[in-house]
Image (cartoon, rainbow, N blue to C red; front, top):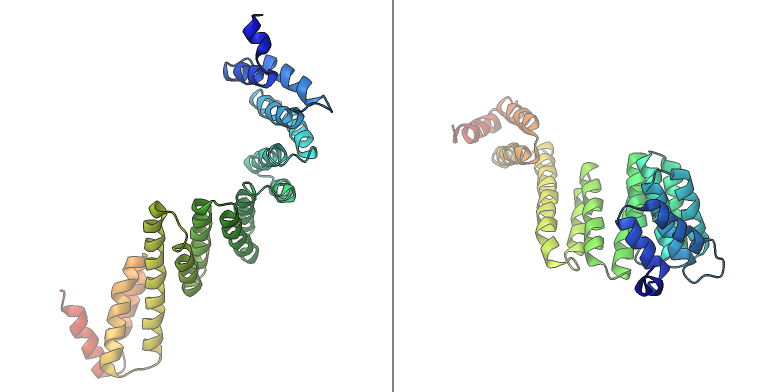
Length: 269
């Protein structure tokens, strides 16, 4: 062993060995460091050991190493270890174990990792069809992202929250979330937020047009509302609904309204 190798910190040596594919040698060094209860690199070594063991295919041993790192309570490496556990459980479809691990990330409380945990918990809630919990976690992710100074992640969480609201017919709430997000989003995130805000406004417009038709307005206003609704719905991928709206207007019992709709329907023919 050369003098330069003797001077290289063990963690750096283990990292170099792992990157070169010598996982056994890396695991040996990391295992020794992680086993030292007084060692200053114990938490970091345990996380590294978890990664190396997983790469080697020793999943349960990797989880044991990650739990050891988590037990140290180190603000950085304990959080990394909990994320490692959670992501592994998610890959295996073990939702409850993943949820517990992400909750452990929150327990560590390191600001940089809290938004990631909130987003992951929201995803698990959506998968479990718990929309109330998903909304709560996404709102918390936005707040946590801003608290951590990660406006990009906060904007991403806001987009996901708005998507969830749009999927469940809450366009007004989605628009409010997006307008708030536009106040802090990084510049390159703004176009996507604006497009999503436009979609929310289209949904709101459809609701207003439909409400106008249901309220039984005068024939001219009713025909206009029917036309606007029928021409807007295809923009939201609802061409069949648009066809039904046209049919409703064309066959309306109010002959004056039906005639107005017929004129509007035929003018682009």
